[in-house]
Image (tube, rainbow, N blue to C red; front, side, top):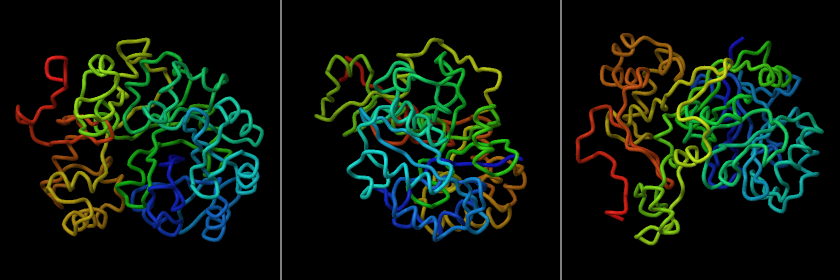
Length: 394
C-alpha cells in the first residue's frame, strides 16, 4: 500500500512551536492535507508522551491512532557540535526509557533535547533499542550534519537509516555527493504548527505492507520510498549564501574574504547550494537506480496567497482553500492528482499556478540567510531579478 508520510514535526513543547501542536489538532489537519502517517515529534519529552498516550489509541507495532490518523513516535535531538538528528522510535515504553538514558539538561523543558553525545554515540545507543536514525535537514548551515562534516561517516562512522534533505535541498542537489548513493532520502516538513501549509509541506510516499513500525523499517532498508515531495530548494531560507540581518545574497568568495561579516554588520551564513558544491563529487546528479522521483510543490494556501496577494491565514485565502478541499477532499489531491481543467472550474486563477509547479515553470528569487525565497507566477521584471553581492558592490 502507498502512504503519504511526514516523519519530522514538533509538539507544543518545542521552542517556537504553536501551542496548538496537539494530537487532537494535528490529526484532522493532517487528514485534510492528505497524509496517512505522521510523526509525533518530541518523543523524548515525558509530558508530550503523556499527551500522546491520553490522546490516541495504540494499534500495536509502534502505531498510535486518533481520528483515523496514524502516528509513529519521532524526535529530533541536538547532539554534539549542534548537529540535529532525527530518530524514529518503536513504542512509548522505549521512548520513555531512552529519555531517561540520554544525558540532557533541557529535555524536560524543550521538546527538542540537547545532548553532548556525538553522532556515533547516539547511533550506538538508539540502535540498541531498535530505533531508526539519520541526520535531520542534513545540509542546513546552522545545525545540519554537513555543516561541519565533509562525510556522513565522519559523523556516524556507520551507515545510518536515512538522510533527511531539508527544505533548502532536493534529490538533484544531494545526488551530486557520491557517498549518498547508498542512502534513502526523506523529505519532511519540520512543522511547528498544525496548519496544512506547515504539516506535510514536504512528505514521502512509501510503499509498505501495512502501517506499522516494522513496515516503516523494512521500507527504509529495502528502498521502498516511491516519491519525495518537497519545496523547490531555491525557496528554502538557507539555500543561498546571504546575510542573516539584511538578507543580501552574497557571493561566497566575497563572504570568505570578509570573514563572513556583511557590510551592514550582520553575519553571513553559507548557503546549502554552496556547501553542496564544496563537497560534491559530480557537477550533475548521478541518481542510483532505486532513487525515486522528486516532485516540487508548495503548500496550497501559499500558492493561493501568492496568486491573490493576500496573507496565508486571511479569510480570502482560507475560503478559497476550503472550497478546493470541499471539492477534491485533500490538499495533496489538488496539488498532485486533480486535473488542471477540473481545478479551473473552481478557480481559474489558481489552476495556472498549480500547473506551473507541475511543469517546473517558475520564477523564483532565492532564499538565504534565514529568509524564504519568493515566487512569481509571472515572468520577473528585470529590476526584480535577484542581485548577488560581488567584490564590486559589497
